[in-house]
Each structure stands twice: as structure tokens, then as C-alpha cells.
Length: 295
Image 1 (cartoon, rainbow, N blue to C red):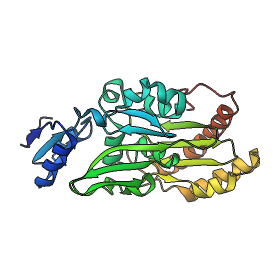
Image 2: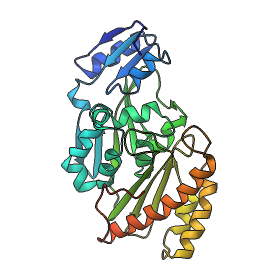
Image 3: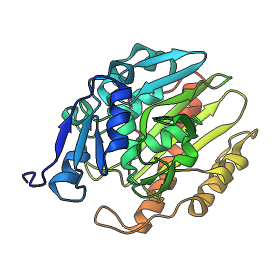
Image 4: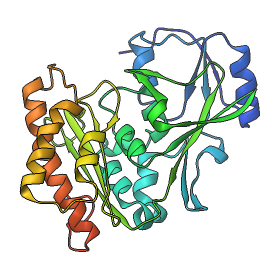
């Protein structure tokens, strides 16, 4: 499908220039990877009068670990995450998430920040960020601000981003205790497909868990009831069964072209049990390698 909508294009040399242009434009769009934006323009869902390409801003392309916090810049792609030594050493579950995103071609362009700015329910980055209590960092002409990832998502395709702002990156604090994780994603087939259900579980050495769902809720959510049930307890088959029953209270799946509501609920329970087992095993040093599919 060709692009029939006319717009101006600018590739600023600095973040300051980008913010100035945004403030002056009535309807500008930010381009980083462009994997969502280009399709939206082709389909006339988005009709910007200006596209601001921030891909060339080196300060936004960083992946760094400082003061026990991981920073992923707005320009960092999923392929960058897969190749990052920092990610593999400190946050291997991010590597696991990134490996399941679409195809190699898409991963070479798509960014975590673009993913959360599109804010579609089946996004991969949302459950990851809220499980890590991440912060979304923004810049505007009025200054910088930070928003907890749990407050970033307002509704499907709607975020807390304000006009004239740019998301510069996301920050993920490193847990204060040893931890391990597992990402479980269900699609209709292996390859470039959107999630029917996705789930991220972190198991921490202090006996607590962080559990987040995506694709079966309008916006990604932490499964607080399940976390409360599991925290500090010995994980037994009977406790897992109780947790699985709570899943129906934590998620709100729909029936669409990719799956029925009933199938999503059933698979969420299967995925939860497998993911929990894998996260605990990894924490104990005898789990499967990150990147191993649990489906």
C-alpha cells in the first residue's frame, strides 16, 4: 500500500532542535524505527503534517547500566538488545523478550520505546517494563519528567505522553536481590505474529514474585492478587492451582480473529505454570537457557 498522505520530513541534529520543531508543529509524529508509524500513515490512521526522525540522535541510541539502573534509549532496537552484553549479563529475560519480537527485519528497526508509544494491547515491552518497575523518561521544552511504566498506559493506543514531548528512553532499576525471569508468549505460529497471550514472571531470592500479563488486558497489568498469594510461600502444586484460578480475576481477554476468550484464559493458565517453574529453576541455577520457548 503506497503512502498518499503528504507531510514534511525533518532529521534534527539535536534533541533540542527536535523539541523546538515539535512545539511549533500542529500535528507532528516521531519516527524512530517506524515499523508502526509507516503502516499507520499508509492506512491513513495517522496523518501528520511533519515527521521528525530522531534515529540519528546518538544520545537516544544508548544502552547503559549505571547506579544499578539500566537505561534503554528511544533509538535502541530489539536487535541492539539481543546483541548487548549488558542485557545478557544483567537482564537476560530482556534478551528472551526481544528474541520473540516479530522477525529479524522488524527487530533491526523496531524499538522498545516505539513499542510502548504505540501501546497496542499485544505489545511485548509493556509487561516487561511494569514487572521491573521501570520509569519512562520524557523531554519537552518545559523540561524533563519521569512516569512509572505502570502509569504510562492509559488505554489501548493511549499513553501519558503530552503534546510536544519526546520519550528519551526507559529506566529499569536492578532488583536489590538475586532474581531470574521467564517470558512466555503465545502466537498462532512461529514467526512474525502478534501475541494471543503474553506473560512475564520474575522470581526473586527473597521469596517474592513479579507477574505481568499482556494481550489479555486492554493495558499491561501486574497480577497483584497472584503475587500476594505466592509471596513468601513454598511453591507447591496446590498453591499453583490456587494461583491459576486467580488468573480469571486478573485478566480480561476478548475474542477476536487471533483467538477466543476461552482459549486465551486456558492458555494463560498453562503459560503461567510453565513460566513460574522456569523462573524458579533459573533462579536456582538449573533452568533452561534464556531464549528457550516454553510453548
